[in-house]
Image 1 (cartoon, rainbow, N blue to C red):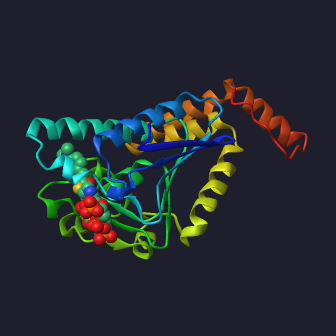
Image 2 (image 1 turned 180 degrees about the vertical axis):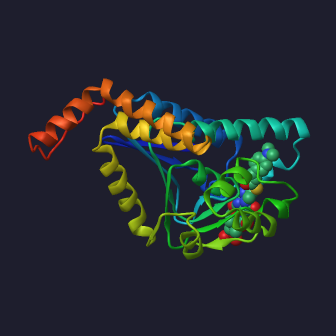
Length: 259
Ligand code: DAK
């Protein structure tokens, strides 16, 4: 696994897309290594939060690998799309929060990877876009679906139909990212947020993620029912008893057990 690096810092995992010669473009090899890294994090009971970023100082991910894609047949393109979408859904449905630390270009599959994460923090030099129509294709790793759910649909259509890149301040203005930082402050900020999340009850954070994500695809009544199921399920955990005992006994420094 050298196209994706996996580091662990306490309860936080950092996944780094490491294909800098192609500005971290998503070749099949990169996607395979990303799938393995996500599986590792999923199975590590001591990891409570995850950061995804790109190697180097210029690019998060500059998209799917155009050189690899160019000569694909219809069937091969469908297979590539299915595989990339499977890996991105693994991230979206991972029972741990995932923060994208967007350290430069987030184009095509790069913007789509960021959108599969829960929270997007970006460097002030970041550039976003879905340039696929200029290459003769549609977005293929969920861009038509996630962008239209994340920002106003008319803006999503404008970004996809024009293929024009947008700069970080505009991405912040339209809600595509949560916050901007000078490049050197991006990873410290992402780590601080991830460690802050990791101090809370991991099972409660996971249940909140599930309720939000599943609720977005349901009616309001269905979503509320999902929330009730997730909320009540927390009462079967040791961490619910512990968290409430800590409050009632005025204990400030909590150490949840993830049970
Ligand atoms: N793929 C492959 N190589 C890439 C790349 C990419 N996406 N982006 C950059 N590179 C390579 C460049 O070819 C160059 O390689 P060398 O010439 O050095 O060998 C190296 O990275 C440095 O790039 P530049 O020399 O171009 O660097 P600049 O600073 O001048 O420009 C740039 C940076 C990010 C503006 C530019 O590289 C660029 O425009 N890159 C392409 C961005 C792009 O169009 N991305 C979207 C890709 S399409 C689907 C599945 C998936 C998708 C669609 C359908 N289905 C199966 C249905 C997803 C599609 C995409 O993501």
